[in-house]
Length: 115
Image 1 (cartoon, rainbow, N blue to C red):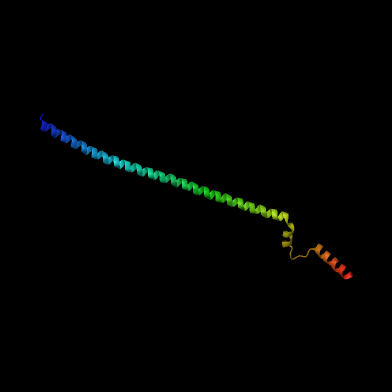
Image 2 (cartoon, one colour):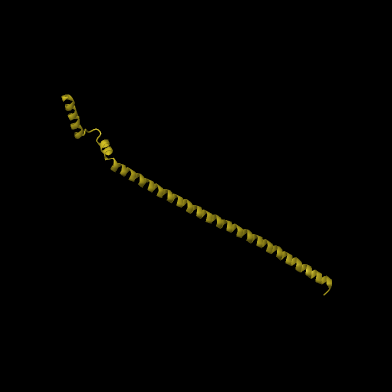
């Protein structure tokens, strides 16, 4: 084997290695791109699920708060009714005269007439 034939075989082998190296570089870059793309999608999905969970928790919290506020208002209203039962009766019977009041008025009239 002569030096020229050895150099020629070496050049073919180096060219072949360079071709395979370029092929492997392209395959690596494509795989890396796919990996980064999948990671980004997975991260977006996790963020999406987290934000959906967060939104659902906010809605649940708002509904619970609304129920509590409604219950508190009902309790306040009941307490007011218990504290001031005359208000309720006076509003219900505003058009009907109270016999006790009528008797007092009559007594006052007779007392003022007699004096």
